[in-house]
Structure formats: C-alpha cells, structure tokens
Length: 326
Image (cartoon, rainbow, N blue to C red):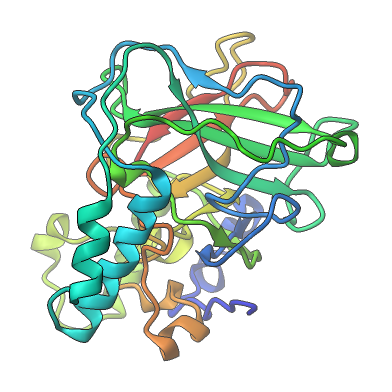
C-alpha cells in the first residue's frame, strides 16, 4: 500500500522564500510489518547475502548490558505476536499460548563475537534518492543486537553490492545466541515516499518559529522554551528515511567530519524507534490515520526511544561511516 504524507499545516517558504534554496529531498521508507524475501527491500528482513562471504560479527567488548541467556529469534517474534494478540483483545494468554511459551527453551550466553542482525536492505530500484557507488545497486545494513558504551548505540556495518552478482544466496545465516529484544527488528516491507525538508538554520529558524507561533492563538511567548520548535516539527520528517536532514535535539547541529578526509558527513539512513509522534499528525500518512496503525512497526527501541543516524562522506563511499544518536 502506498503511503501519502499530508501537507504541512504551515508553509514557511511562503513567508520566508529564502528557505527554498535550502530544501532537500528525503525518502520516507514507511516500514510496515510483512514477509519480505531476500529479493525485496525491507527493514529487518532477510538479506541477499553471498553464501561464500563471511557473515558480520561484532567483536567489541563494550556492550552496555550483560549478555544473558535468551530464546531464538523466531521464538522472540512469536512471543511478540502472542503478546500483541493478548493485549489487543484484552485477555490473558490461552492455554495453548501458555504451553508454547513454556516450551521456549533458553539458550546459554556465550563468549566471543556476536552475529549481527539485518536491519535494512534497500534496492536502488525501490528507493528514490539512494545514490550507490558505481557498479552496485543494493545497500545492506546490519547491527550488533547490543548497545555499546562508546555511544549508546548498536554498532552498525554497511555493505554495498551488485544484486546480480549474488548467485548463491546464504539461506540460513548465523543468529546471535543472545541479544537485547529491543534491537531485534520485526521484518517489514517498505513503501518509499519522497518529501521536502528544510535544515536547521540558526537565525532564520528562530524567525520562522516566532512567525509560526504567532499564527497559533493562546501561546505565551515567555514560555516558548517549554515547547518544541515548530520549525523542526514542520520541516524535518520523523521516522526511518534516506537522506534529508537530521532532526537535532540532543545537541546543536555540527558537521561531524569524515575521519578519513575531514569533509562534513551527510545523513544516509535514519533508523527510527518511532515513525511519528501523535501530536504531529501532519507526518502520519493518511492511510495510517484511518487505520490507526502502530507508530512502531519494526518494534525496535534505540537507547530510550531515539534515532540512529548513519552519516557518510559525500566524497567517497570507501570512507568509514559515522553513526550518531538523536
């Protein structure tokens, strides 16, 4: 199903035309629960991974939480579905469900590297705005299913490849023996949609905020610091997306230069804990407003409901990517 984002309730460009030159296109991916295959673009779905290529593992030792016994990924997802059914129907677990839960066997925690989990697979044919290196048409992103002390995020790995070159697909990839459930994405299909965004822009942003609040009756301008910036709420899309701008909140915007060459990095992929906030209905697609769909389709939670942004060097795909939280 195609998703359509409503128009912004306020068009700052109509009042501040200088914003038009700063515009950038972002592609909202609109992940929704589904059963994608390795031949599909997805969030949390199976990867078109060569059988001859080693599967990525996390070798770091700074995992934020203790590695504990857990159940298989399939059982974790089954338990989620049963829990969702119970909650939606306002009932207790059935006898059959309890028996299934009792049969789920924990596996002991292990030492050594942790198999990474697929978090995104994006074919260029499906995602407008995705700019691949020459000779490639597929982006794959995996992460460690644990947050790390160094930045409070799961460590990520990026791979660009040519889909046609993968002739022998790995059908049973390794899975981690233990993990944080919040970092196990539910497989989702995607419905990409392009939207226009405008960046944080200092003095201009403040002028837009003041003008926007002036259109809303009953606002006490002495208490504006208690409100979120309307500029940010109207001009930068939430959710999982390709490109666009970063919705800054934890700190002021900064260039985060490429460690290889010093060039300011740009956002490639934002992986969001939530696709929208309920008080920003202008970002909820029409189709989801009518259906009342969940704003957490992949059922992930990144470091207390934040976003993980992968930033890359615009001069070379070979330079190491940077990840950050907002």
